[in-house]
Length: 373
Ligand SMILES: *Cc1c(COP(=O)(O)O)cnc(C)c1O
Image (cartoon, rainbow, N blue to C red; front, side):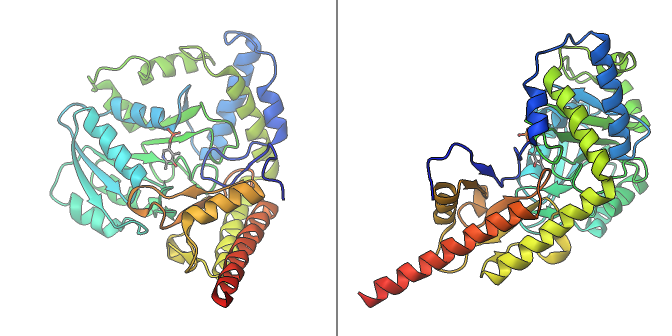
């Protein structure tokens, strides 16, 4: 086993592995962002993103990580003092609440313990008799590995007359997300998760109702002013210099996704999730999340007795070149997270499971030797 090999294998929930064809696309000489070629590229990307998000409108493209799009969603519809309900089931839900607070919103949190999901009935209860302008929700909570029932939550939010802003960073492209059908007002993702690209690009879908809120929004903003993006998008271009290489790479990754087919992609994610959960459990790992809430894109595992998260991560990295993520905050060193979204197949899950199996076996044989001494 060679600890010094150059290539590490990313089994973290972003950035995710990038297919070779896409890496090659990224390394090509630049083209001008006002050129006709680039406009054609944008046109195709926008069409394909309508297909992937099942939306009649294309999203706005930003040169920013996912959090940039999160900030754009907030700063374009929320005014200082607006009442916002933030549904928080982990760190990313909390981040969304904090961004809303940073723009002066009066934020109330509906929080559930780590590893649990938001109950749509609790949302209904919370919204009863109150006038929230906006509800923020994390579709797939990457910090704990749960997926919320967004369809039900959105139905409750819309019944209560609020806008629903959705962090879909680790669900978009990994599971079905019919934006129009579920009446989602703003939905964003980043390039480095299920879209199989390097980091640096994010996208934000905006509903008609969100555009109405935009017209009445006085929050100071410049770079992320959605009106500018809408105006330039109509001309198949962007207001500022975009990440040209990433947009061209996105055209390529969307073509790959169309080639595989949406249903096939989503089924593959479920298959890999179930495979990982089943086999990790058989190796003695604990599953941090109940089956019905388990995320299609990231799985949190609890190590068997006698081996710690830092030991597992170190061995995986040094002996196998495989990187998994620690958990954050309270869960740090208690659980670790395996990302399995985007360019992921049975082979990757198999490699990771084999390495985990070896590490656990090695550790317990070391212990037996110790006990004999
Ligand atoms: C990765 C991620 C983000 C975005 O993080 P960036 O580092 O800004 O790209 C936001 N929400 C969730 C749920 C994520 O997994």
